[in-house]
Length: 223
Ligand code: SAM
Image (cartoon, rainbow, N blue to C red; front, side, top):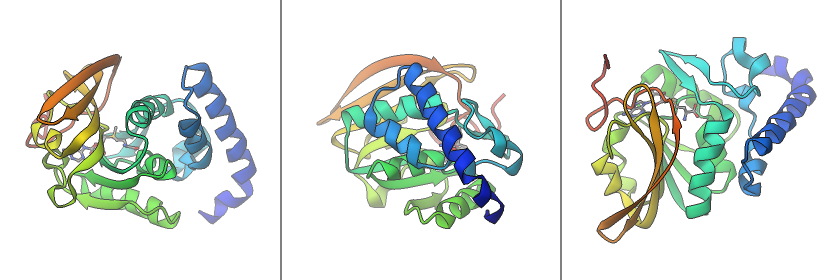
């Protein structure tokens, strides 16, 4: 990472430009915008993508997976922050570690699960190198993290075929899940709030995520 030091001013300028673009796209929550100003996205992408780290694009991170585009991360994070401003949050799909770092910058206590070992290790290095304190687990995130439940928030950063039942029951009363639900081509961003034993739903824009694979997701090799 030392080669980046001389580039930090340039990266900070690009980060400011990304935040201005997020505002133009309708992201208005000041806490979310501050977090995007703080977290160094260029430290979560592969070397080849680094010059473009602040473009509003998803980039490959290996193993057929991607770091989500900044707008998508900002949109999901805004849905969470506006309904669950603090507390304990579980992310499913660590990927690059960027979303987890954004949640940490917002002051949440962050837990994240990734199912692919190589990605889990890569994200761990990126988070550890920056001293970002996120609890991490390798495994099938659709099973949640029962020992740490209940969670005030759960953010699923992969495409779920249906509501993940086990995870819903790891929400605290009043807790909120943000999850893209749909088929493999497109999904509707969905917010589910637990109210006692009931679940209230809100529906938002369409997105396209890589699949959530696992016991309550898609089979391991989706068609
Ligand atoms: N949040 C990530 C970031 O900030 O870079 C982007 C996530 S990427 C779009 C989706 C990730 O979900 C992939 O790394 C994939 O391996 C992971 N994933 C898919 N199904 C999973 C599961 N059942 N449990 C944990 N991770 C899963």
